[in-house]
Image (cartoon, rainbow, N blue to C red; front, side, top):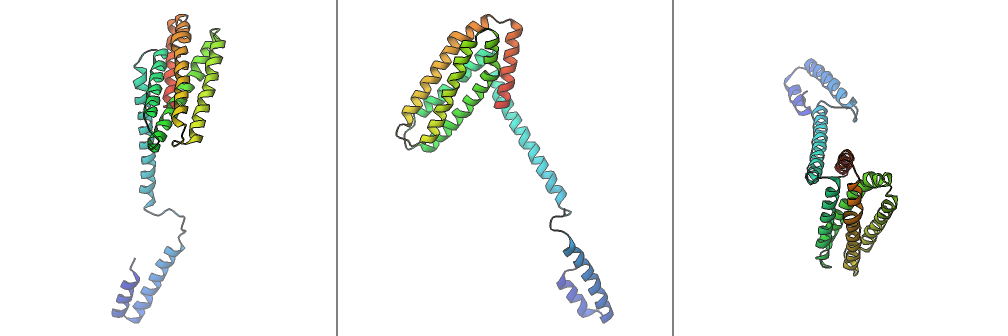
Length: 221
């Protein structure tokens, strides 16, 4: 479609009748353009939509790959109890990094607390949705209830640290108390409850619990 400047140049060199004819055609084309809704899909919308869908697919694939890599690394550890013990060690290592910070490293403290929160949330989900129900089925309800109750105090510590802020004067003291709780919790599971539970399991039961822990860990990764 000719621009307004081109139409004006053409009008100067043409006859009056041709000028009027061109003017009508130009007006008709312009009217069609102005009549198009601002919300209608233009000819260039197709590639944009395709790019958006492609970007979403790539993002989904990347997230799926990240989950697969993270949980795949844990799955190579062994059975369900070994996977959970490895997660205990990883959480305690984050605690140690937090305790090595000072009051000026607020950003690092925030990042470490976020990492710890995600790790403990994933870990708790695996235990609460798979291991503790299996413990109750095996007449270990007292131990399961105690361990699950301690998860509530773990969430309370996370809440208190977030409320306090990374520059709080008692931040390290609170982190140290938090670590002690998680360490005692992990020791009870690894040294008392889980070995007793696993010893009474059949190979089929052990394999099923391991598969379910890996499944729930994958979706929470």
